[in-house]
Image (cartoon, rainbow, N blue to C red; front, side):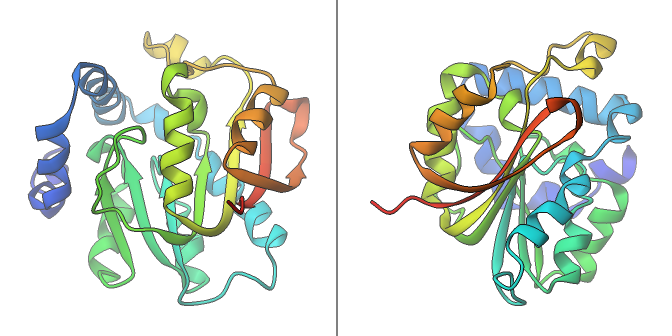
Length: 225
């Protein structure tokens, strides 16, 4: 933990922005995930964002090109950043807790300082300094958002999308939260509910089936206004 506390990430302006502008709900959620990421190593064992990267790459084959930008909203461990780097993408990682990043990813932030960046931020309270990207990526995240904030999260992500991206949403209650004593999946809804929400801002252009219908995975492009 000491290496994280001393990390230069803590000196970046996004962290100061986050701490100075949190409301009570945001502060509560941040504190919850700070504890989970910092004190429960087992939570890092599963990384859906990494697991579903192939769906994203295959679904947009021929359209993903080196030099394009991508934002990973709710990046968690951010292990998928290694796959994005292999494609030559310029990456911004966004998460509410700075403790989320794996040690390897924090090391890559230094090695690829011109290509890989971390921005601490709450998805319903994103800083204006977070600029738009060609692609967005958001896996195993939206179900963690309080239901009252789903619409604004999708709106904020759409504002920062120039073309399209990939969503993966778990449709069931979480097991990790039960083990850790913290409810993590705050918005558990059926697929049709999520389709209606996403359709307000994006056009769903393809879906990927996942065993047992545990996730709703879809490729999207920004809806033309």
